[in-house]
Image 1 (tube, rainbow, N blue to C red):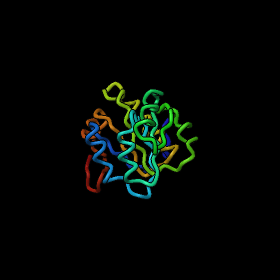
Image 2: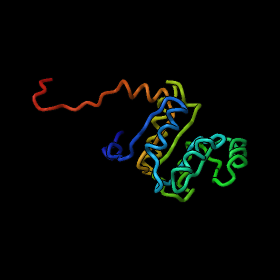
Image 3: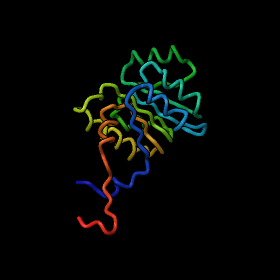
Image 4: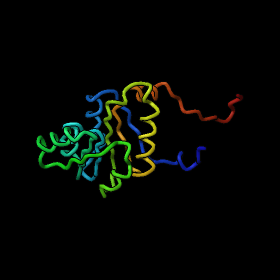
Length: 157
């Protein structure tokens, strides 16, 4: 059952369609005071771009091979092995993340839309960042079709 508390989140969600849009958000959403978590960093390319704009960044991925390669390509950055759905592991990183970037490419189709929404909700309710930027074409398309309902005075229906 839904509770009123779940609708009081202050986290802003930014949906992007592809890696170009995902990375284009960095100068707009990230500043020098931010502590950023990237979930699904693969080889660390976006993590390195984030590092140029924020105080601290941690890149995470479920693949040990990706983490190993990211560490070799970007030795000055922190990369950790982590399953995106293990929010407890994100808490165990010991940081108060102000922004979270999520690039979980396996969740790109409409069948995975509920997984993406679940992931966003978990991170928003547990870590409470100011914003979460997610690369999900399905989510971006879905949101573009949504209109929040709000009855105004004089609305007869």
